Amino acid sequence: MSDWLAWQVVDSAFPTGTFAHSWGLEAAWHQGEIETPAALEAFVRASVQQAAYASIPLVNAAYRDPGRLETFDELAEAFLLNAVANRASRIQGRTLVTTACRVWPSDALAALARRAQSLYAHAAPLTGATFRAIDLPLPTVQRVILYSTARGVLSAAVRLGIVGSYEAQRMQYACGPTLDCLAARCADLDEKDLVQTAPVIDLLQAGHDRLYSRLFQS
Image 1: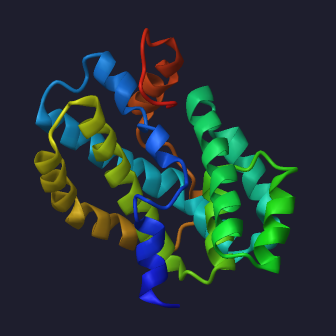
Image 2: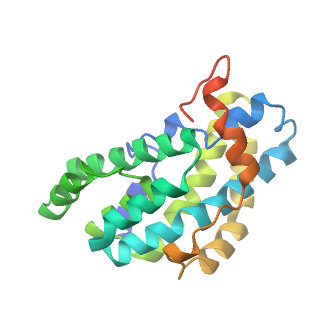
């Protein structure tokens, strides 16, 4: 596996549709929960931890045993009780496998896309199965999940005008030790370790559809 592949999938130009989502940040901001840079940093760290324990277990499980993708997809559906997060997960899952099929056409990805048509197609299990199909190593996949979550929240913060680009980049860099720690802790997790670590963010995000005006889908 070339390093270029890893760089490609973390590039913001890679079309997975994540730019349309704020990971609940927009709803939290409208509710007055993100009033200072420190509050934003805390939100980013909580979001990354949530990704580590609520996404990576299913990513790992589907990567290691893609034959049970349907089981892991149903588990994701049962776990994501927040309708906004559930919808976002399904959109991103389908977008990822469709994009992968177009960028790296192969029989394996074509078969995965056909399977996804009969699934809820949640992002976490489909991420594991898709990245296995393109031979991206699992430790790299785990780091992609963590990095993309931090970058996605901070990118949303810039577009919402909460912070500027320079401050967002400083926060992204400051997250490095947290990302390393979580990558090490979650390397061996599987579907039995699935857990909600940020229930307040989940509750705030659930109100996203009731915002008077909104820039993001979630």
